[in-house]
Image (cartoon, rainbow, N blue to C red; front, top):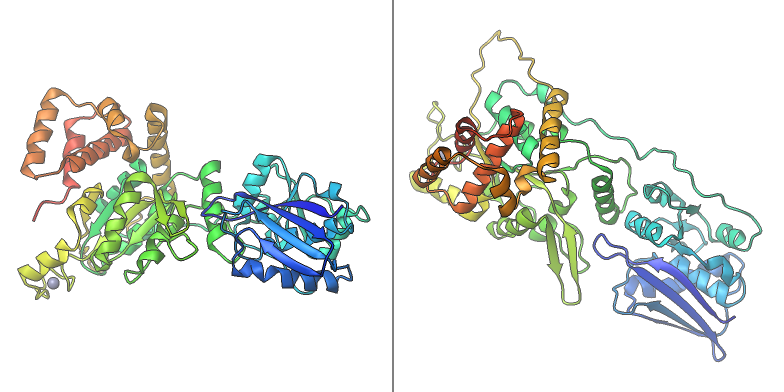
Length: 497
Ligand SMILES: [Zn+2]
């Protein structure tokens, strides 16, 4: 047999499309041609594979070799196809039974010695291989990650010779059994460690209960960052689908193997972060911070300091829950269903409104600072809260506030009500569902309309306000939205000016 076919998987965004590695040996002068749009790192593959095969004292076929990576229109890079190419060469030259390659897929980069090195993006490939009903051969370092696709048969290997011996039937490698080490989570910082700030904690609870976006405004040192970092600990645990999505993103984004899982992410990019770092990009599109925050929290401290153009790009994922990155050759779609928590100072120096009179900013400067944030972006933030400095009196008892665990319990109940009623969190209600589930009495509707006019709220802001009122009713375990819920929701809208 001078033709062999080995299955592998490419990596496009968080997807792992199938790639067929076809190896054909023909008579003629020894040469190796690689076709099927391989990029630089894959072209180097042939040298690595040759050395690995020779160093394992196997035969590198001295014939005319054609390697085709199909489909040709799929971009392919990295060393992940090394192992498939090596197995193809060995099978085509009769050193491996082709039957042994049926129903298996493989991933792995080869060292010149024949050792098998880890690759990125193993989990998406594992999920796809499970879907296809195939067995997956992976580098030993990646085995634990591949096992997250429960039910998948994983063969973990660390050297080419070990695998060849297994496929030849000389030895048997038992399917890898997970040691469960990945199923570990780091505790989130606790709400009870934040002293005072009752109103801010309430806003945090409401944000968690309805998946609402939140903006804290206040002078430096009032604990805005402290508060924001408590949000992931209030959110319900990830369900299996969400957890796998989060792990798949980490798997393609990180060069290091996955170490702890499952956990809601908390991402805090600096305001000097570039557009591609924040939303994703690069010649070979990589996920940005908003994707790394998928199913978790994206915290943007000092919001007005971010590049305005970058902030405007956030509007799309805030609505749709994903971002599409277009490049000359391909379009990659990354998930980005994050909850935004932002913080800002009241003025450029940060001390506007403080009784000390430290602020020397002019009205003009303050206006310019606030104008850095566009109306449409602010409209997408449901809860606006001013955080004031807490009066600290000497000898005051440290407050033993609510713990994250008890708040999370309340959030969990509110989320369950929403799931049962409408199948999603309140923040994600679309317009028809909003009309169906956020019904007001005619009097309350008229009252809200007047209030919206007075505050000159946009229609989008008014809809978001209704969703917050819905969450407040859910927190109170009542179905009907009442005047008090609308009134509290109104308090979370910024007063214009
Ligand atoms: Zn100032």
